[in-house]
Image 1 (cartoon, one colour):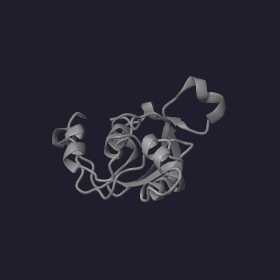
Image 2 (cartoon, rainbow, N blue to C red):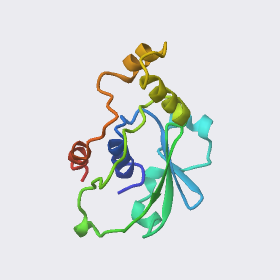
Image 3 (tube, helix red, strand yellow):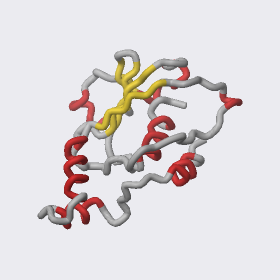
Image 4 (cartoon, rainbow, N blue to C red):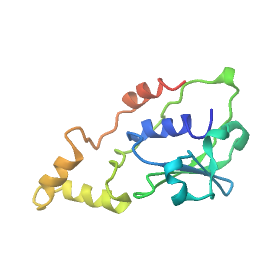
Length: 156
C-alpha cells in the first residue's frame, strides 16, 4: 500500500469526506504528498512523491505520523501505528469507536466548524437558516459506526 492511496482513502471514509482537497503525510520530519504538476510552483521541492513509497518501508509498530487534509482548513490528524501486518494477515480496516460527527468540508477549519455548530444550536441566530442550508439536509451530528465500517470494507 503506498502512502498516498489506501491510508488516505481510509481516513476520508472514516471522516465522511469526499477527497475534494489536497493532503499530505509527515513521517519522521519528511513530507509526502501526491505529486501534482499544476501545483509544483506552489509546493516546490519540499516534499517527496507519496506514490513512490510503501507504508511498510516508512513505518513500524509504534511509529507516529501526521496527516493533513485541506491545506486551507488544515485538518491535522496524529496517527500512531498499532501494528504492521503481513499481507496474508490483512483484514479490511474498521472503526472501533467514534465520538461525534466529523467536520464538514470547507467549514473554515476548527474555529469555523465550531462557529457553525454554535449557530445550528440555536434557531434564533440570524445565520441559522443559511448555515443549516449550507451544511445540507444530510448533515447529522450522530455518527454511524456500522455505515462507516460498511464503506471501509470496499478497501482491499
